[in-house]
Length: 256
Picture 1 (cartoon, rainbow, N blue to C red):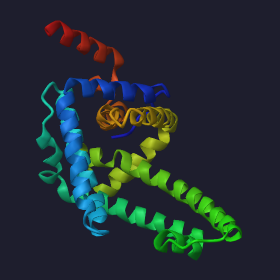
Picture 2 (picture 1 turned 90 degrees about the vertical axis):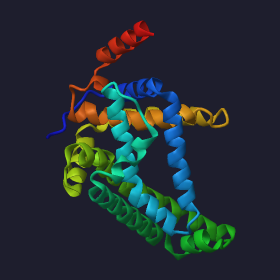
Picture 3 (picture 1 turned 45 degrees about the horizontal axis):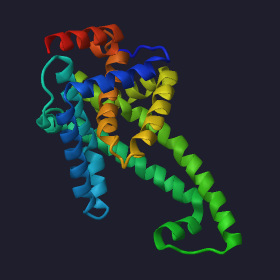
Picture 4 (picture 1 turned 180 degrees about the horizontal axis):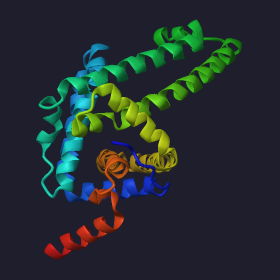
């Protein structure tokens, strides 16, 4: 199964289609996302270990949410139980993806600290203070370390973007899924750039009214990931076809 290249405008269409999926079941979407955030917050209470555990399990939860999106696409209901589907199917490959992601994050942090130097480590870990002259040097190191971290984070995110969906829906081995995800993102770098720019803008707008907009924003992001996967790997999908979406929306309004 090969990824196809889509026009740049599809980056915006993914978000619009994701919002439409949110509208199909808004209450359950909010409940599902709140539950996932609650799980993450609970694990955060475990010092260091909690973050590691959630990173390992994040592809499992992501795959479950994507199964819920597929259910909506097929005309079925989104359910809270979809969040746990990854624990019943392809669990080991999904956790393997989490392990890859965790190792990638650790290596990136290591590079960040190495470039930043011992002064950066002292400032971040021990709260060490510096005088004005020393601080200028530390800030230069932080800038260089941040740029290096960003350059390494981008390919890691590209490798992980579609990987949980490929493992869950296509039963791909983890490292093949990682490779296909990376090259699918590389082939569609323009629509993905548009997609991310629009998401950043919408994210800033979502947090302005006391963060209330996040109730719509977070589910829309999850749904848009599913739409982008279908558009690139399964173009016959309804949610990758604007006209089909509009027709289904009209049919829904008529039925109501």
